[in-house]
Length: 355
Image (cartoon, rainbow, N blue to C red; front, top):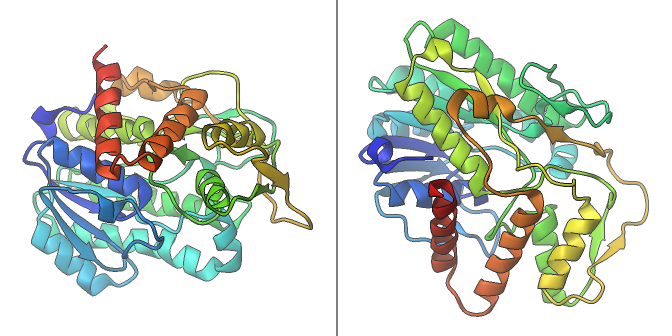
């Protein structure tokens, strides 16, 4: 499990800290005593989780990873010991509408971050680049992807993240290995949890429909995804960083999958109906009309390598992840602050790790 002994006092350069997953990560790191510089665009949704959280020890820098000059300045000012790169254009449907912008952010933005770290972080111990479960070449066979399976993407988002991994691999072999700085990639996807209000994501779509008294429109209700609560992959990322920063790099994998605990797979329809029941919706969904962008119907990951190499195990099944998300929403609808709801679930999760 992530340990205060390691993270306390670490200078962490965290991109994407204003996003959903970045906000949970920044809050957890703050609780463990990390000194953070967050670098990201301003939150793009209203409401957003980040402005509702108190994160002691975090210096928030609003900027674009596609703009190298301020990025370099922020890295230099931080002088990080650890870098975690989360900033991305993370939405499949938006990538169809804005493919050039998606590639610019996910590929060239990653390159800019790695360049900034090469030249401005003399005390760097480890770098973690967060990608996605969608980097794998998916034939809809239902095969649970392992880390050495071929990469590739059908849609612009998936393709851009697979290309991002090629940049990471190149920079690792060309620059970071020579400097004895571990550079790894972490893959997870379909993360759910409280505080996500992004466009074209299932839980936020249900929340928005709820507030309007409408049913959410589903494009592919029979699709299966490895639903996981945000704290499961974040705990994996932090465990992975600890492992590569403190152990022999030669013994560590260059990429790891993080997936939920095994249970019967949940379709988009089942997730929607579970959340809809928690939100007191009589008819939580209806089928989208007309042609829709192509999305893979089956996507699962094999995360056993993380267990064998860094001792990480998911604590929640996909169904429990949905239940935790529903509980967070119910709590905040009932008057609990987002800060208290986040902290309560981090406490609950840490108790599971210690059990």
